[in-house]
Image 1 (cartoon, rainbow, N blue to C red):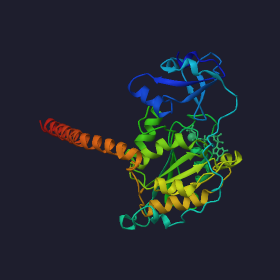
Image 2 (image 1 turned 60 degrees about the vertical axis):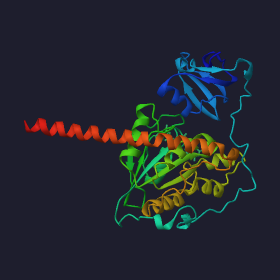
Image 3 (image 1 turned 90 degrees about the horizontal axis):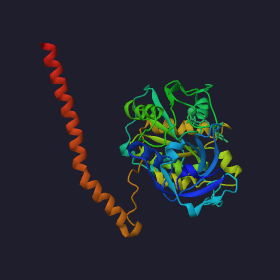
Image 4 (image 1 turned 90 degrees about the vertical axis):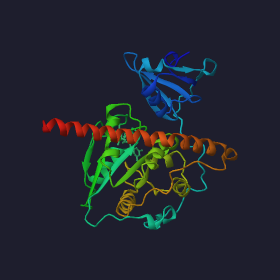
Length: 341
Ligand SMILES: Nc1nc2c(ncn2[C@@H]2O[C@H](COP(=O)(O)OP(=O)(O)OP(=O)(O)O)[C@@H](O)[C@H]2O)c(=O)[nH]1
Ligand SMILES: [Mg+2]
């Protein structure tokens, strides 16, 4: 049975994620993975696409794509109709948490590694996060603009620049939502190209606090870029409204970057976020962790496997880069020869 055949209001467990190449990767990036429960919320008026609920958020899929996802027929149940919230693992005992102030980020990184940018340099920030996590709402708060905000994914399709209020030497760029650094749609390519090619001085990674697990997939990939980064944990008003809380300190020490709880819609925590973002960019405080491999997990088996594979492919990756450079050099030579004759 495929996801396309699941009736409205029914829930089932995904068994096999089909499709090939970029499409399959896109399914996985969006959280459609074997073992996950998925509920059909509704169909569009013409019957296609279908709106699904997965990991507590809404996802829209074309029927032709849903057909590529197999579900366990015996797992089909009627949904209770309530929106699932990811609050089950959130402890209330840490509702009020202290977290490092400015300059205390040294807890997570070596001061000796800092390379402050020269005074007067324009600090450029990319607003990066999943679709519909509140990037544009935050952009409007930061810059005083009035860009279009909407409660559905894919509202922003191009980048927009603005200066952070009262900080003339800054430029912040609102970007289309992205699930991972392997882009699928053209809007996602805009975001990836901006982050990789424009090399912003800092990244403000917006994470939906009501959907931390799914959002952190992109966070992990952004951390690997080794660019100064702050995590803006948005929608805290909704999280609190659900009776939940987040252990900010723990999250910070696990990720090795400042985490600032905010509500972009209610203008809460924005000044603190700006101060942290400017601080990490100014002092080029890079994330302190990139390797999240736990040496003790499963007696170190996962750690050994991952590092063994990394070791095996490292020379191939270097060779690939070397080949690309050689190809470009030869191309330049041909062009210069042609232009001489
Ligand atoms: N409750 C609550 N809602 C918020 C908050 N921030 C944004 N929203 C709402 O979330 C929805 C999405 O906001 P956008 O700012 O358009 O999100 P986006 O990340 O720019 O979305 P895309 O451009 O589509 O990727 C809107 O309905 C906002 O009003 C917040 O802090 N709390
Ligand atoms: Mg937007």
